[in-house]
Image 1 (cartoon, helix red, strand yellow):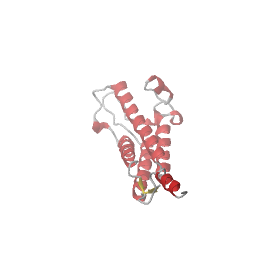
Image 2 (cartoon, rainbow, N blue to C red; image 1 turned 45 degrees about the horizontal axis):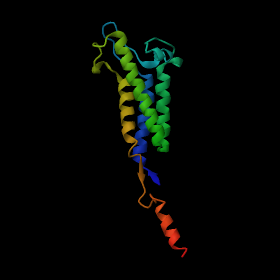
Image 3 (cartoon, one colour; image 1 turned 30 degrees about the vertical axis):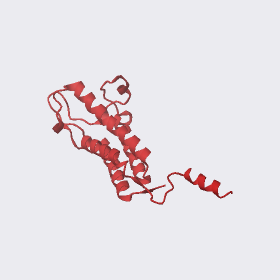
Image 4 (cartoon, rainbow, N blue to C red; image 1 turned 30 degrees about the horizontal axis):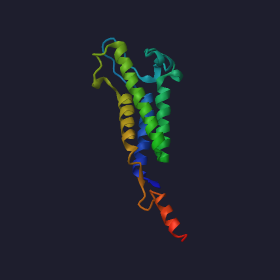
Length: 160
């Protein structure tokens, strides 16, 4: 049996909110031929071909990151390791994929870490902290019977 750790669950919930907010904010500064942009206009369906293309917000990568952030919030409220871990990894992978696509499309050597803006940092930091927080989000109770099969030997000795 495990119990929730409310402080860690609250931290995961805040991380989910940061991921969701990061989906709507700008991600990168303009430099050279690269415009300032975010993931709100990057086509989700062109990612199958690892191609950077523009799209409407409703069909963009921002929908995936926002949905992952909302599910991390739900995982934090429920103190669920599965929801928190799976969807924070999804948000982190989407962030890494977008940054790689953007760098490859415009100029791989022209993208520096200080070109990243608040949206990217919120999504990356929120995802990393949420992934690390899945370990301590629940604690094992001291009174929990961790080996239920050990009690079967005691049952057979009572039958004599």
